[in-house]
Image 1 (cartoon, rainbow, N blue to C red):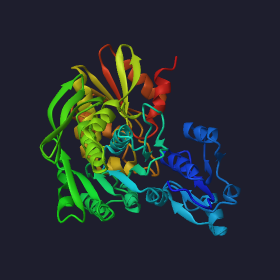
Image 2 (cartoon, rainbow, N blue to C red):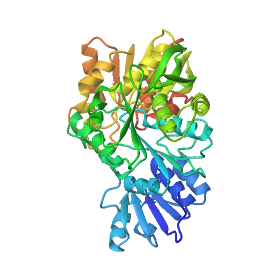
Image 3 (tube, rainbow, N blue to C red):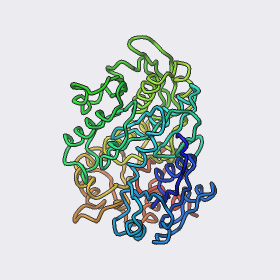
Length: 454
């Protein structure tokens, strides 16, 4: 980021989130005085405090005093005391997405990774390739990298990699040099009417690409096809079945994939990924395609992808229980669950027990049939209650309702109201040789403490 001549004080409401904490560190590195607040302490707030950032626990009007800008995320209501105090003091208030766009604009070049699935992993892969190429990039990633335990990179170069999320059309605040579109699917019924509405938003995102820039699009994703019609910018395609950047001679060993990367028919390198699942071939191809646009060569692509150990909460190994292996993944959409189950079953033939926490009532209601279809695939399903996030309950939309429907199809499925009861059910179901998948984007990771509680 370009240094500012007169930095001010930027206050982040909800600074303990994965994206907000990364933004706070980006602005601090840019010379701003940064403060923030959150309802409770967590690993992110502790890290910020250790870095010298003042973090208030709890929201209070006095926290924003002296700020030149207040930043809030979508979860912060308009009647929050800090929002009201900022308005009363005529302090500018901006959404997280807008501030991310402003941060991205201060770099010479920006790669923005969008898509319904895979953004976090692909962003991490792109950052790894560009680091191997010597570009010293900065990055804003929506998850913790396994190697560093961090969700951001503060590089000294002029290149920035960031996730670009379609939720509430947040990605329209970013004007990238390279826009990556991994896929497009219906995932947020609280802000999109249907798939066509989602596709229109991605189309608008392409119009945000800077002159001379390009879009990197998955040629194998049917829902992205319309995005390549009369493109507003150069289009670079990637895929396994088709695309300018392609994977060929694919081999799988214990769930991990090895393949050759080709660019317009010319072989660049052979890569063996550390991360599980065929879906990560697409993430790797997209990261390679975007990095090539910015000058990365074959050696850097190979080194970056093979050195990338993955993201936390993405097929992350937790340990063993009663001879069963336990993995955790962020998957919360039916397509993501399907990809994770496929990766799990590829490890070896064994029973797969799926512990799934649905994320939001609206998604569960809208994609109910899709969830039923995909949750028929594991040998057993265990579900804690739905993670509400920003929503209020919807009558009849519960984990118990999902399980009841699964049982009607002859599947083994049970729902539980607490993590303690869920953990007890998991322990009872665990047996030697089984694979237990803990899936969800909510607070399901807190189940870990109950699983290994004496």
